Each structure stands twice: as structure tokens, then as C-alpha cells.
Length: 85
Image (cartoon, rainbow, N blue to C red):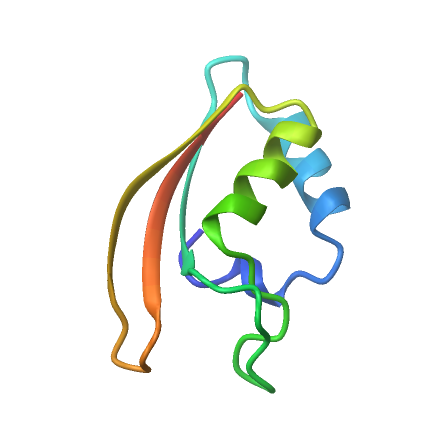
């Protein structure tokens, strides 16, 4: 999921649905802005890495790891992470 999760308002329900459809060895790769501060019309429901990790662990995912980060042309940092069942 690249720059898409920040458009999901109810992330807990979404994460629960993802967990239900992934196989036991399933993995997600996420690319997101590393902020919890919304940007009107552009990034309405962002989540920084620590929030992402807490969210997915709270619904039963086993391991959330930050892979990398790099500067965004929009003045923010973008991170990538894996989320494993």
C-alpha cells in the first residue's frame, strides 16, 4: 500500500479486514508519510510509523518493521515498513 492508508478514516476496522484475508505467512508493505498531522485534501488521516506499529499490533499482527525512510518533495519524510501476520 503506497500512499493510500492515509485516506482510510477507520484504520482499526481496515487493519482487522486485512488480517482476516491474509494467509498465516502474509505480509504487507506500506509506504506512508511519517506524520500524524493531517494535510487538508491531500493527507486526511496520516499515521506516523509508531502509530502504524501500535495499530497493527493491537489487531493481532505479529511484527511491524521500518525498512527505510527518505525525504518527500513535499517537505515531509516518507517511510516504508513491513507488517507481518
